[in-house]
Image 1 (spheres, helix red, strand yellow):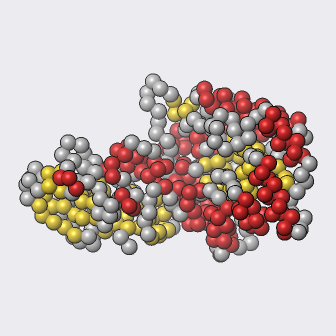
Image 2 (cartoon, helix red, strand yellow):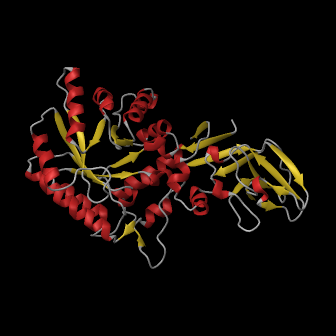
Amino acid sequence: MKSWLEISEARLAANYALLRAVAGAETPVLAVVKANGYGHGAVVCSGVLARAGAEWLGVTDAAEGDCVLRALGGDAEMKGRGQPKILVMSGMLAEDADVIVRRGLVPVVWTREQMEWLLGAAARRGDAVRVPVHLEIDTGMSRQGVTPGLELDGLLEWLKGRPELRLDGVMTHFASAEVAGSAQTRGQRESFERAIGAVERAGLRPDWVHAGNSSVVDTEPGEGNLAWLRAVALRAGARPMVRAGLALYGYCLPVCPPGEAADAFAPAVRGGLRPVLGWKTRILSLREVPAGAAIGYNGTFVAADAMRIALLPVGYADGLRRELSGSNSVPGGWAMVQGRRAPIVGRVSMNLTTIDVSGIAGVEAGDEVTLLGDGITADDHAGIAGTIAYEIVCGLRAPGCAVRR
């Protein structure tokens, strides 16, 4: 393999335990493994999180949920234990309904049409199954969800007359949960409260109320999102639940710049998380280049002195961002060789990248190189590439994966 991922089971389980401890025993943490476990491998991470005690897992779609269920069903350590429920978070199409009903997945819905697809699938099964759904409320993202007001009232009235469907949960998603004191979040909270009032007036009683993302798992006293969520759930006669995604894998969104806004993450969370993923490769070959040699496409890096460069068999086709390229005027990213930084020199190519190992003795072809891991993080890549850690880890395309206990 030209590169591979290493997933730390111990770190993933520890991150989950930390989030669960901060959320509190009365507030379960739904572990989000969508988008192939944020690039970490949904099947691998689902097993780790299930064994760590996760009651719920969140997937992208019905196909991903089916894969996760199949993997959990074959996990010897899960035999005799209740499997987590699977929430399908990113909508559904008509062709997904049969898989959702047959496999007992729990879909996020917000239209009558989606629920009619589920009714049809249940009717085709010919048994007395009641399909659980989680109704998403659009409180201000204009993305997924039913709009509070007449649209929501009409949908609830229709749902009341469909005993084949069970309103298992009501949820929303915050656009700025990572920003403490966000005016947008306050507005969304108020909108969600009104929606919960409509659910109450309709005589529907969900089991779960949940909102936000990793940033909702905070410890702001009194007015924090977590305290608010608990109060809203209590009002609805439901249990509160939080959804943790990126934090499970060891990252938080960057702290907001001073003077702009405060960071909503609890210090216990931000300080205790550890990245789960390592990305490794091996040196293909080594080359001595003289002063004045141009390295890579367009000669954006020219050696000022004689150098020793190592060739790596990875590039932007594998998820190593082109923005990490290093020129004479703008330094780029780096890799770790023998525990030391080796700067990227020249342009990152589609399948190849060159690094400077001039000051590292004893480097040979075949030596292991760390692209992400101890000494370099997804936050480092994101800072250079002008993006966020989500995009870095979700964009990795390493062909192999190993799990470290």
